[in-house]
Image 1: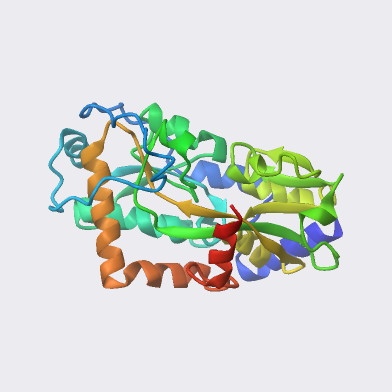
Image 2 (image 1 turned 135 degrees about the vertical axis):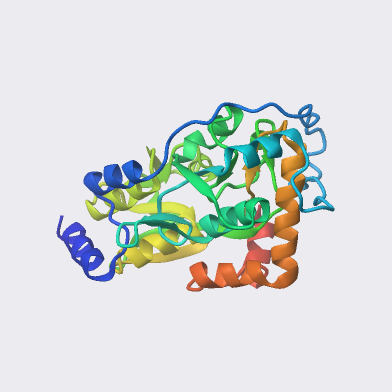
Length: 315
């Protein structure tokens, strides 16, 4: 309880994201959760037979930036893009109670896609949990999901992913006084991760006791209350927790390399190519790196360095 009190005081002073139940409800209420009518589109993508040999491949970028297919015309007629996002992960997708705005790396990407459609960002956000990411795409409740969504072959059977826009490393977050240096130090102890995540799946067979929660921020509360010994997630997510609670630290070697993609319905091939065109332009102009630097500059070892290569070899 003492560490939770410290966090709440620090947040009040610095404007960081709160993780209490009241703050969670307030944030959810501030987001638009109306569900648009599901829109039709072209035939779905073919079965991902080559996923094991090309797990991160996507459709080529659209040559034109003007929305041309039926699904995108419906978005234009509606007047805004509907995006499924996390709203409690500082640096990625976060409802700032001070500015009453959504902020973060994933949010900036959604805004870029929307600006490419409308000429200026026009987005309605829908707060979703980790385990809801596939279902809201399949049902048509949202047009796009941007939520630190790791590309995997099982997920590609349900949704279509853009090209990779970020690489993260799964690691551990522990209290600053902890002597834990890796998973081997946590055998028989509780380790928190979100349900439906690749992080919790990779705890199987490690000797630790997985502790599943629905919302990422729930893990930070459990760690502060001493209910778990550590949190495991991508370093991009753990960085936000560390900024919220300076009495924590990121430790351990890379457990897996995670590649993030924006997700859309498999039926909407034209929209997927459009999104890939937006990402290609952001890379070409250097804007993608500037967005990353703005939100995730505190990470030790950036994607593409020797530590990421070493993690890839261990997979």
